[in-house]
Length: 239
Image (spheres, rainbow, N blue to C red):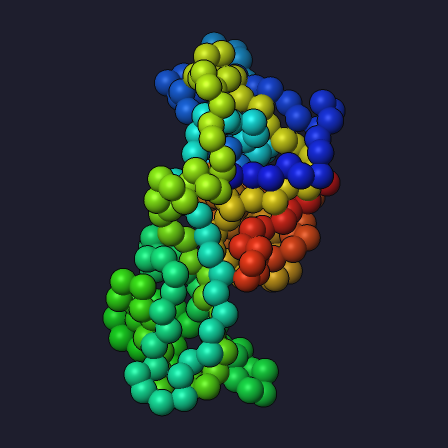
């Protein structure tokens, strides 16, 4: 994953924390929480959250040596008027059952959220490789598809640029920078979530941002812009 601190961050918006023992590499853009109990009395951070009582530390930042292992895409297509009622997407989805969202919208503007299933139906969509199959009742509907995929080495390099020579600060010093206030634009989010919903921004166990989770809700976090075609990134303000 990656983060774009394009709005600029001053020193007062970024903190440095030691990481838990044994962690040498953390991708940029992952949510960090404090690990309890403390290690020899020292507050250290870890990736993700598994409890609503966890304490938010910030978003991992300035990790030049770690390229993204997953990216997200948003595609809007029209379901064919006649069969087969299929849509091709640009990349093979990483996990369609958990990291894919398909919303079909009629000409009258009525939207239906479908779930991944074994066959196309009025409530489910099917996936085979890069092809999504929908029910015939959705002929002519608009389909908005959000999903995660694994980038090739070339795609990751094109997206994030060349990594800086040397080693990351986490590997060399055992610390990591974390943004705890400001605006972030990130690929590090759950693509299956409804980001327009009026609900808390939460943290998954793997450090992704989500809307549904048993992990903690980030205090005073609001979604400023949802992922879209041409800009498949999530914009969140930490206030």
